[in-house]
Image 1 (cartoon, rainbow, N blue to C red):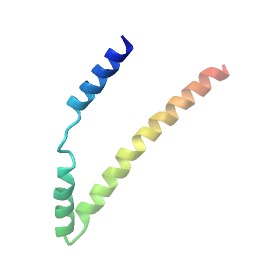
Image 2 (tube, rainbow, N blue to C red):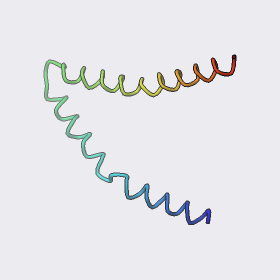
Image 3 (cartoon, helix red, strand yellow):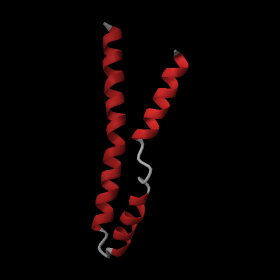
Image 4 (spheres, one colour):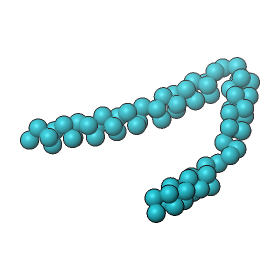
Amino acid sequence: MYTKRTIFILIAMLIVVPFDAEAQCAMCRAVLESESSGKAAEGINNGIVYLMAIPYVLVAGLFYFIYRKMRT
């Protein structure tokens, strides 16, 4: 039973994962290199930082609520 479930999960993950996701990197790089002002590159960098920070904020909030619940 356990191995059937594991195989099913692995197959489902392979079906869901897109195979051509790395194709967008070259397009973004070409657009960012062709612009002389650098505003688009700055926007992309800010977006990356924003997307990177959100999981850390959520995990910190979760640990804060767990800590507060365990203290009472």
